Image 1 (cartoon, rainbow, N blue to C red):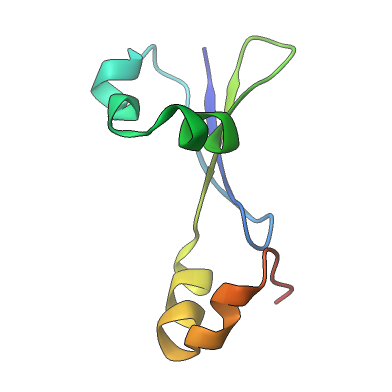
Image 2: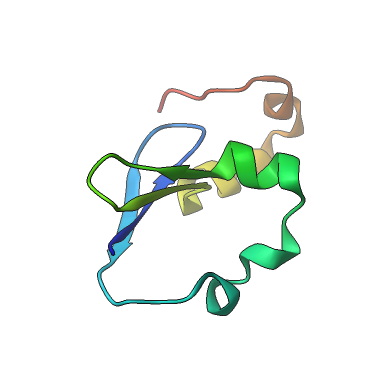
Length: 75
């Protein structure tokens, strides 16, 4: 099962893990049920899409805290 990481703010692909990794090793148990529903999206082909944050958006949020008000950023 492939795990694809995408930035939830700008949509940029962060990376892919193609190894079989158990959910416990990924730390998904730290997420609440609501966070899991928002961030972990099973795909039709058996892979999983994880909504995360890329370095560019993280840097932007650190510099401009007002951007936390928006759900999507265009860079």
